[in-house]
Image 1: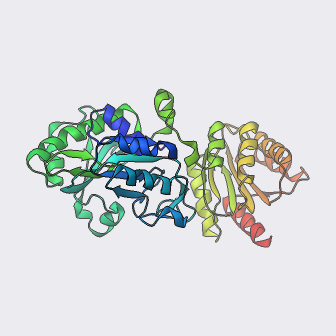
Image 2: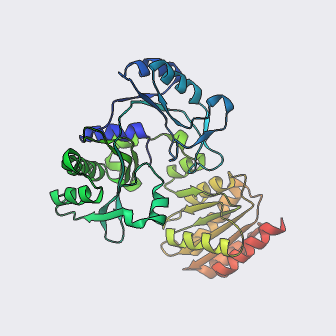
Image 3: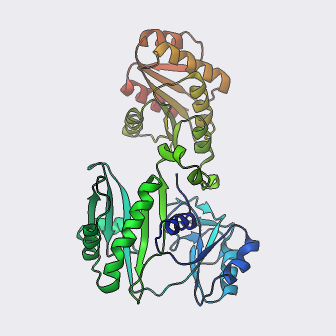
Length: 398
């Protein structure tokens, strides 16, 4: 689950991480009061969407101006004017895709004098099964480009969970970021507090870009991007309360109600699979045969009739879907039970596009027989390769 920058900074502040004063603006009417509550002389007005690249982004609407989604104001009145320009408009960045995202929330923050811009993030390193820090002197830039062009400017190290963040980690960061004086003394405590926030709220990723050093040598988190491990949200109702469903795909919201792992993609073949690995293989083989998947959808190990029906409704709600591929391994669930669930879902939802079903596992022959004798427009496949070829051919024949 992702949250907005202003929400991330509120969490940072709870854990003692230094951030600049700021006020969230949830309606245009709040803009003037919010701007005047900050002392100035500089105000930074930031669009709040779940995507990066806001500063370089562009609005689709001409009346939103051409200065991007992050703007520097030199008076409270100008800050309020920027809010009115951007609020409700569609911001397109390198991470939103061409459709962009509507700006429904804003954040006005006190400006800072900046001597250095640094990059710092924390994530779960699956290679070491530990929390890892990623740091670079190239803050405020496209970190992916830095990693590609000058990888030597990125330093990564992991934290032993038995000890947590230690003083030597702070010294490692100070050296990696070329810090001295007051900033070198502060980076360790700041990073330690960020680590505590990461572990304490079960984050999956924390990014501060830029982490700045002021002329006085103070280290401040000037930005904040955070995502949480969805599997741990039951422990954090206060985090769940921060969810902004307007930033999410309607189909993904519906899928979460049925504990379905669903991610919308841009292709034409809808996929329903049990198991994340099998789902990825299904997406890969569709691309191998020249078509694009419309979604990732994992119904899980216990694919009940209710889940299958819900999955079909979500897939068919996508107008781009021209065909559906069901790829189920009958391990916990028997194939005949799954076949009946698929047919019940087809009858309940209605089917206007080709459907190919590949079953494997317990009672697979009986499952195929049930599909073959159903009288519905459902094709049975012998294996994944056969299934992919059949659905691609059916989509292209339409």
